[in-house]
Image 1 (cartoon, each protein chain N blue to C red):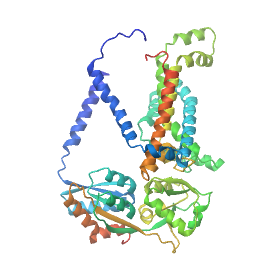
Image 2 (cartoon, rainbow over the protein chains, first blue to last red; image 1 turned 180 degrees about the horizontal axis):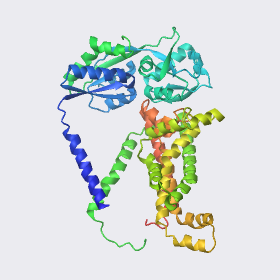
Image 3 (cartoon, rainbow over the protein chains, first blue to last red; image 1 turned 90 degrees about the horizontal axis):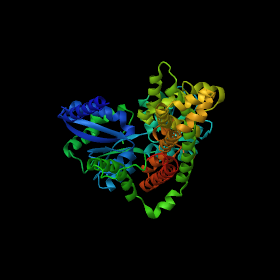
Image 4 (spheres, chains in turn yellow, red; image 1 turned 30 degrees about the vertical axis):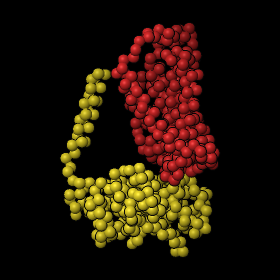
Length: 247
Length: 268
């Protein structure tokens, strides 16, 4: 017993020391990005670090609402990329950013598991109570956009679950546990295990992603460099590869 | 042990460290209380979302605690008393949910019991019964995370039990099941109650496995912790109010049961 405790203590100390001394002397820029930007921003991170080897990009990917909470509570972040204008507006209203710039847009699709086992063909099918239908919760942008689309289509969806973010929804669709959901076009491109069905052409949900340098950024110069890169031609090309459209 | 306590000043080192230890739990509670919107509390707590979540939470956590009791006590007995190969492996697997991130547990449940799961698919094909996105899914997720607390507590008690009473009953002709029912269970009843309460409390606070396995729908699968999570991203006052309901319910039950169940025999 005594030996066990001593070993555990020694092990902990070694772990603590090794995690402090790092050995990486690059400067870091902490980027808070909406979870729907996951794949696009991982590509951007790689390209940005290749172009700026002295800078280490750290991505904090979560639902926009969680990120808003973290930023307002004083997380030491440099850049914020939101999945909707209203979350960004809340950050600006809280004084955490001065202005923001739209840098990309997205569209919605109905997503079904590969092979479409429930034969979903149209947004009206989401009203079928025999199908297992998932949406994002209305507290996150993908849930708000999905509800806008359903309202415009005049469909009252028979919802079985409101997922906390779009990744959680995609995971359940990939696993075949849900028959249909409404996700971003980028999610359908990113996942080989789901397929997308376009919404009717008359449904128009404007999805714009704004980005901002945060006022309390510990490294405003690095933050600006990252911000500029996202808006640059190479940055925009990477976003287009991920399925995002021009803002 | 009680009544023989020697009046002596407690060593200050223990008191100092113990106070810091207590502060770890008290400070967040104070934080929660300072953020509580007292004037709107009644209105927030009486909202449909909170009432639905409270009912569902009480129902599922109590069900989960009793299922844990029904299955966990025999499991603990087997682990404590039956010598079979691989026993320590089974014991390790049983306690796994205590260390596994609940979200991972929920995903694992989905792979096993979901519509495309190893067991879930044949069951669904044969009966049309589906656990995910249902109240029973919440109960299963709760049992998965809560039962280990009961098993560990009860197994510990069974191992420490003085076997002479059971042996005496057996020599007097009692069957093994009678011995278990009439001698073993009463002797370990304090641990049994403690394990039951621990399992219930764990089930009440369960979030990750539930949201992953059972989803989140008000009135069907949205328990109090899920409602807090959703509200936290929408309206912090509601989130704080729900948290306070959760704290009040669990504190009330834990304090009440402690007085009724845990005081006799222990030093308090």
